[in-house]
Length: 353
Image 1 (tube, rainbow, N blue to C red):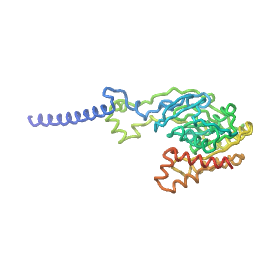
Image 2: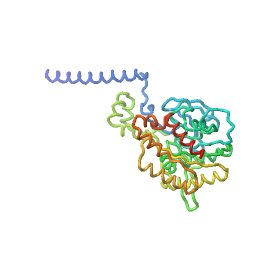
Image 3: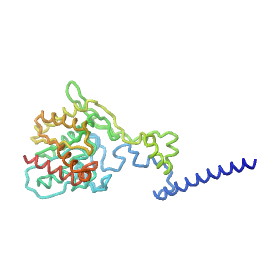
Image 4: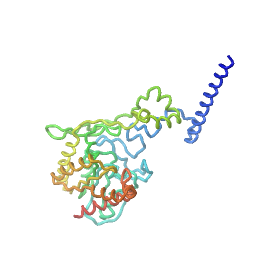
């Protein structure tokens, strides 16, 4: 009987010591975070829960025409690097001011590579292009846009800006985004293919209220512990983070056909406004065969419409061949300041031809 009691006591002491150790670690993690008394679910508080683009503090707002646009006339910080971000009217990103007698005016549209994620205002390629050409360059790029949104944004701005040149920059993923009816947790306009041509859908765009996903009993309980969160995100990240990221919905699976047909719409815009069009193909850090194929096909579509194009694949391959260190200094998710300068130099020589 005494042996049984002693065994039970020893087991209880081991369990108590183990639980006490866990409690000490939990308190330590909370003190390190400065949130000793915070008992809300960490999964909803962490960066992993992003119901939509507007929930991460990025300088954007809902727009019924385009889905979202940068806020106008603000000074903010880039969400990943803390680089300064300044916008003007219509959410146009500042490229700085200078006196010029140039008769040119360049409007640039595109995604985060045009907007300049991860870099400061003076480090985007539109800013460098302005400095090289000594010509006003309007940076109307918007992070997360598809080619469809970029062209719609150009159409919405071109009459008021009256540019002499319009540059549409894209990456391969922007072609796929043409098929999404919902991206980054937000509804967006998209085009459907019909017998009559492209038909604009989701216009005007409806604002979708952010919705918290159902976590279930286990994540509801353990999600309140910093220690459990640290363990689970390493042992079972797919389960632990399931449903917490942005949501995407496909509205038109023929996205490649949509992007190709949009080149005709872009051509007509240029003819209507007497604006010279240039389509620039940029690339993400990891060059895949599928991305290169998608890009080439769209360039072919633009060329068939008589639109001038510039493929930056040779520049990407040139920099990658110089080695990992130099390639990382050129592009690290998005282009670095040095990378954007090289991009601007290529575009500048092409515009001058």
